[in-house]
Image (cartoon, rainbow, N blue to C red; front, top):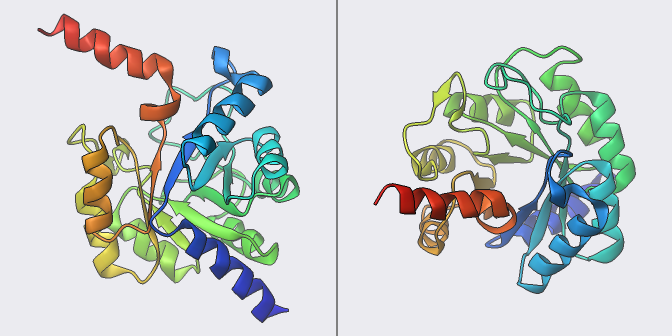
Length: 238
């Protein structure tokens, strides 16, 4: 049984290699959060060649698993992101959240792998429960030290998702954190995912050149309000 689970997990991890993963997410307060809108967005990016989806919430994970044969990365977030979001854990923060994603059918479960304090359980609890359920664990981290710690705790993959979004990793640039990607590739033995602030195809090319296993793109594809804001801001700063 253990070998069967290992082989199944490796099959999914290999499916993700050199792929563009599209993060299709919206907050409940946003127009695109409606279920039919999210399904339409998922269909659109899959038609465009997305190799996998990164989705927030059991509803969207369940719908994606019914519709597509590509890997689905699932996570949970609160309906409203707290004002002190840099200080707290809010991505898949509890075992209960993991349970919801497992039942929905997520192939990979993404969670906060930072060193920030947790209310509901420990980081070890999250990783253990994902493993018990035979799913792939993807730790969203913000520093090299957090990545190394998560590797010691037995995670399957690391993602740079939270770089620039915690107190331990202030945002120094509008570009993706290529430096953290390089450090993780050199200092861990895990597949490394580049996520965060990716807006140009050339940045994807650079990520793969530096050893990224796959690249997650969200806002540049699926957040119309942010795409619009970039163009508007450009006009205002001329």
